[in-house]
Length: 527
Image 1 (spheres, one colour):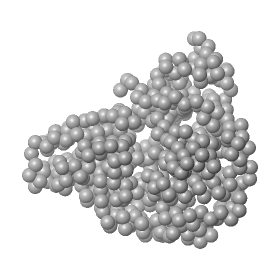
Image 2: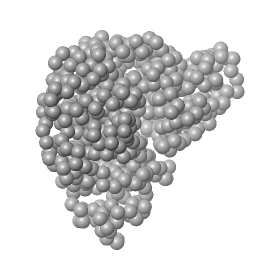
Image 3: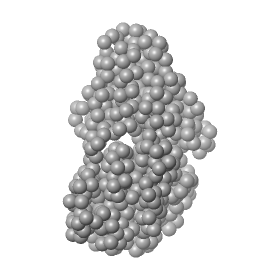
Image 4: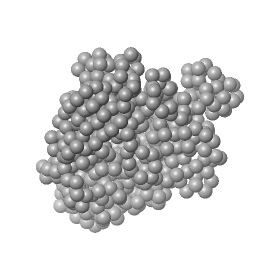
């Protein structure tokens, strides 16, 4: 793929240089030299897709949260490094009082922009409770949250209806843990609902200076910020969907940090660009083939099982990742509570068994559509699956879409397109707790993120119970049963968790990431 979808070419970026660089463009001078000569310390990074929202209560994925980390404050945040952990941010102190109560005390002097004053416990209460009140798609991040009690301006207690073990690694340090200004949000929305891409106030080290959809985002220092100064004066983020396109942008000098494709890893390691460090990180993401159980062509479980057994996963991964990705046994990655040692359907599948299921369904001349993102690896996956299904007599039409179209197709709130979904190659970025990985498939998520329209009362029961259990072995058994239920439905063929190799320019930055390679921009340091 030669085009950078949802992004901007080097030529287009240079044309916008005046807007980005305060009007300073040196003809014939490399872009990186213009930036560093004219503006001081600037971090230039790649996002793997365009922003969808900057409202933390309604975030749509990790790319949104990467930016929100720079704009808002949270009680805690993830530590950078190779081990998962958290540390205090807006909280001066935080403790688990009992299984359903967490008390926090805020640091003093954290200010909101726009003259909205100091961040207080009332803002914490408003921020957390609005996610539940407005039934955000991300409300499951808060599990059984009941309310937040305000004791004084700086102290409060987070109250849960039942114990909620994942709060320390999901809710507090990630998306819904960001604190917004109650007064500013109510003024902007009247009822506290989502403000989308128009944040009314900031409380983090950066503010948005400029944003051009599908082109760039420019973050500059927040003049009201009184905390530790981040390493860079500005952060410039270019949305580049495709890994190959991002690699070319890095080679051209347009960005200094990017995730890279697995099939390029060996080449880049043996012959890296000048002044470049390449790091390999394990991934908590997972990629799978899903099937819409409600579609007339896929209602029969025998048809779905035929598709499961016809797919040879190692062949798919060899083609898409040049042998650098391992087979997934489910949606929960190795090292995370609930990871299965093996799937119910063997990785190689079995064409003879697949044909038996199709014969049992009494189906012939079946034609299906397979939707995927227009990324090199996803199109490769879809193409290999297309060829494999042809071996049992199923004809597949591959339909690739840009991110804006793809990520709304299964959502009922966006229209009727969900009814047309048949097969889909999908991907999701996880967190270090299985709750975050499996909650897309509770029944309440049908028509939101549950595009397979999978429904199971037993699954929902296990889902509710598992977050209350402290014993890791006992929790693991519940999550393994949940994955078994998903796979037994025939609606899922688990493919891989991939990996997260990154590269960055050592003459410009010391990169900082989560253990899974996701950037933590506030911890990047200039050289």
